[in-house]
Image (cartoon, rainbow, N blue to C red; front, side, top):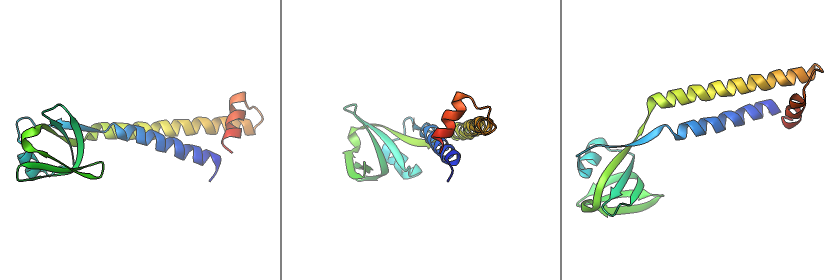
Length: 139
């Protein structure tokens, strides 16, 4: 893979990860009891706030008897339902995801075009200092 392709792929990956990380949010469901929420929506990821104020990001939640069961950092986790103050569901923010992906593709295309122009100028002998540095860095 040539230097310019490696650079473009790396830039695209970094930008995509940065944008996609912000495309989710946790949303509270108001006065819905945690056991009803888990039973009706079957969420994959939740954030629970306990009566002591602690917050925990959990996966695979379920309710058994009077306890909330889930996984936290890959390990089993549980708490009595009486200690659950709030349960928030992780949701994808579709509009922001589309905007973020579009921006990432646009930024990657502009950066690639700028580098190609600079490298082309360097190949023609009218290279600036920046083009020479980029040519060296992209090898």
